Image (spheres, rainbow, N blue to C red):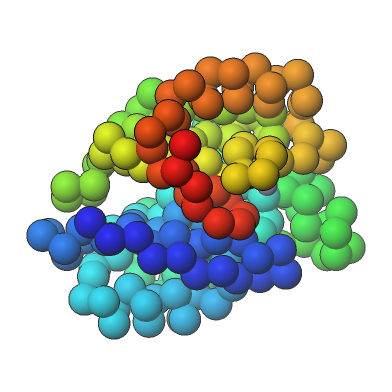
Length: 196
Ligand SMILES: [Zn+2]
């Protein structure tokens, strides 16, 4: 299994490509920036894209979704609680920052807490960790990898002053999450990975 990072967009969002060399299947997490460029990385490494997973619905984590779907037709997965952010520029914070909306018109598949999303040998287990948004999740992969989106960074955690954010809720999510991340490598939505 291989993980590639593409840092893209105004806020340096980490788009992750997770590829399984045995089956050739790959998944993208939080694609932002140029869909074409992301797809080039997928193809150059000999992978076939199976799905797009979203840790939450903020504009800087969804910017390349529609382009990638139009190029590949793969399904997009987001927490049922955050699906409403995709088509609402105020709720996904794009209109707050830019005065114009960045939207994702692709109709997503939704998941909920503890769901398992499997693509070939890649199995992502969903942990709902609300607070940054109502539907923020972390994805656990194998025994040693966690993708945390904007819930947890190497140096802190995501802001809670945007739509659906709540400081007490993220603190309680982190109290559940942090013990479960011990010994694992954490890939956050922004910044460097860290092993706890
Ligand atoms: Zn965010």
